Image 1 (cartoon, rainbow, N blue to C red):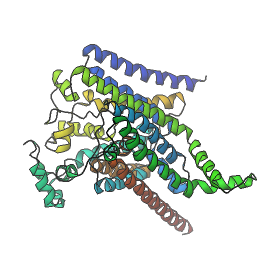
Image 2 (cartoon, rainbow, N blue to C red):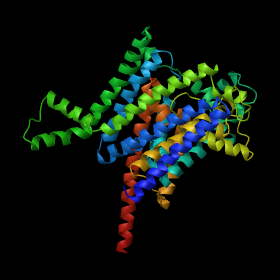
Image 3 (cartoon, rainbow, N blue to C red):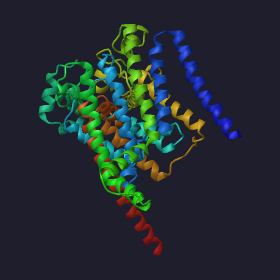
Image 4 (cartoon, rainbow, N blue to C red):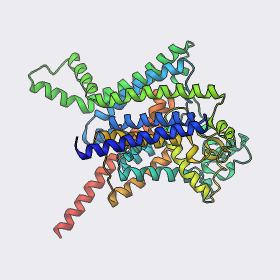
Length: 475
């Protein structure tokens, strides 16, 4: 082992030691901190899995649409199926902490904006977090841009209120929200309370009409809601991108290149080519399912439904929402806590941002030091850093000026798309699809379309830039 390997190992184990120390010391102070530590260690596992599998939705669709390489996109589909089998068991046993989201055309539009943004940024929301753990400066800028944009966007009002239809405003006011929530001066509040909340909320298990919880979960959510659509998408990927190369290879080898058995062999070979991503997806699915079980168990143990109740018991009252809650999803999520980081800072600097639905009614802005979802995201970065260090893949990499600009623009679009869609590529797509939520596929359709448009735009931009540089050199 050379000096670089030893140094990387030392840093990796130092990170693990620091997180362990945090967990032990905070638990000794109050047993309630075990709730935050649970988020911390599951976040750590997510980070390790993401880094190992190079699990990035932006890379998946960019590789697919730009150069015709389907490996990552196929791996993500497989990972969702594997996650679905785990989550179905948790759902059927009544231990799930998942809540489906309202679905409608807004899900598609939000996904479209997010998809364009993640291509511009060069990384999705979760991908940017794990790449930050690898020392990638562009990814860090993406995370910053997503966070700042969300914190501003959720409190937008003034002139933007004129963009909200009267029906949204009337529906929002009719909800009878607490007086502290000023829906009259919040476009995002009118969008959420006056439009999104009025949309249907269904899982495929609900739509199946099956009474038995296990059959409903595995037939409705898994078979109908995940396996069938994923298989169709994989078939589309095979026919459009993988089939030609597979048949060409068989022909060169002197083997038959026609027939259903040949096509099935090609389809299966495409799936097997994504082993690393699929393995990462399997462990993500197991971890995410266990995460739900653990958080449900801790809620039962402490007799609470939300960490905001434990905060109150510990004497921390600042940043709790009007409902007495903070953001405590009980499962893997990414972007909301990033908005909370910046929202808390803005509030400390004097911005009155607790009068909106996002912060003031639902999620709060607790101090990051006692915010469970914050612990999860920070530990995710730590887990990715540990995996990168152990594999000698960690490297500080400062962005160029051009990459920095694209990172900020892409991050801003992802921030807007996340808030319109109530989540990102993880919270609004990966987890929701794996949980049989109808809204997940709608967001995914928009995200895939947005990624396609983003790739096409970059192709045009690159060609235009190269043509200008060539013209300049001729002059």
